Length: 513
Image (cartoon, rainbow, N blue to C red; front, side, top):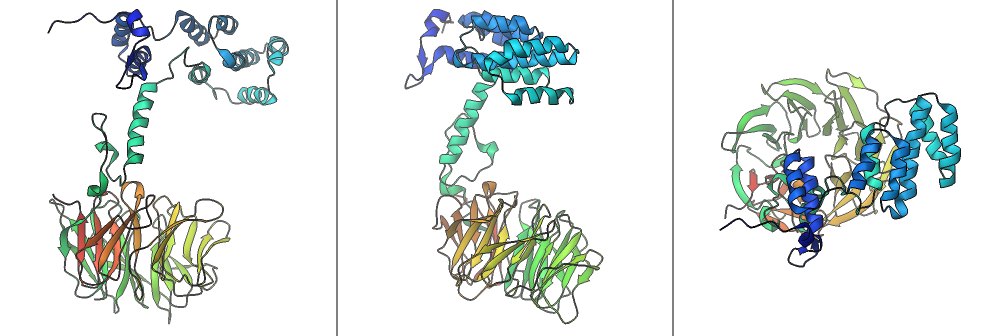
C-alpha cells in the first residue's frame, strides 16, 4: 500500500472521529501533541504540528506564556487582550498583578507596589485574602515558584486558549477507572488493566476453589491469619498449639514451626508489624511471644489468677495488649513490665482487642454489652459505637487503613462502621451465613479491601462485595464442620484461608477452569 498524504489543517479542523462522531479531530490531535510534549518527544510533537497544520498553541497564547515566563508582567497583561478569555479575564489579570506586586515588594519598590494595588488591582475588586497571601509570601521566600505560577495560569486559561496539561493522560486514566467502577466484582491488580481491551472480571476473579488442604492440627482450628507480606500463615487450635506455615517455591504452604508450650487451647495467634514475631493467647491462660525465625518462646505475659482471653500488638511492635478474664485490658512492654492503663472494666468477655495501625486508638467491646469502645491513647477519651440491645458482639476486625470496623454479631449479621470521623457511623450490614453458638470471625480483603469474607457454622465460607450487596456473591464449600475463622492474603488478592472444626485449613484461590 502506498503512503497517503496526511490531511491538511483545513480538512482536520471541522472533522470528527469515533463511532458516534463525538470526538473533534482537531482536539484529538492537540491532545496527542500535548501528550508527546509531556513525554519528552518534542521533535515528534513539532512534526505533527507542521504536518497537521494545527499548532498546539496560537501565536498569541505562546506570546503570553513567554512573557509570563520572563516575568514581564505589564507586557503579559497587555497581551491578554489578544486572547478570548471570556469570564476568566479578571482572574487571569489579578493573578499576574499579584505576581507583579510581590516582585515589587521583594525589590523594596513599595511606592510602585502601592500604586499597582490602588490603580490596577482595586478596580478589579481584589480581595483582602489576596493581599494577605502576598504578605505571607514575603516571609516565606520560594513558597510559590515560577512553575506554580504557570500552573495556576494554565488552570485559568479557557480550553479554547490552551490544552489542559496532560489532558489525554487524564482522560485515559478516567476511562480505566470508570471501567473498574462498573465491574461488578472487581478484584484484579491495577497492573492487569489495559487500554487495549475493555475491562470486566466478574465472579471468576473471586477465590472459589480449594488449592490446598492443611491437616497438621489434631483438633479444631480456631484462628488463622496471613503475615503482612503474605508469605506466611499462622494458625491456632484447640489442640493447644499454633503453627507457622511458610509458602514454598511452588506457592504451597508447608510447616515452618509448631509452637508448643500452652497448657490450654490457643484462641489467637498474631503477627508482629514486621512479621518477625508472633504472639499466642491461651484460653484463660497466658500470652506468649515467639521468635518467628527460630520458633522459640521469648516472653510470657499474664497476671496472677487472671487468664487471657484475647491479645494484640502495639502498632509499632513495642508492646502487647491483653484482654483478660476479669474483663479488663492490660498493656505490657516487650520485656514483660506492665504499662498503666486506666480503661474501666468491660461489660462482657473481650473476644477481641486491637490497636489501630497509627497507634492512636485501642478498640474493644464497651462498658455495656452492646457497645464497641474506641479509646484514645492521646486524650484518654472514649468514643462508643452503640448497637441494639439484642446485638451481642462476638468479634470484630479493623481495615488496614483504620477507616472501617467490621463487627460480627450474634444475630447472624455482620455490620460495617466508618470510624474515621469524629463520630462513628453505621454503613451497612451483611447476612446469609449461619451463627448461633460459636465465635465466627470475618475479615476485609481483596482489591482495596473491597470484599468481606466470613466463616459460618454450616461449614461454608461466605464472601460479599462490600459495596454491591447485602447477600453473598460467593459461597465456598469444602469443609465438613463449622468454619471459625477466615483470612484474606494481603498481597495476593486471589487467596483466602479458612480454619474449621474439621481440624483442617483450606487455602482457596481462583478456579483453574
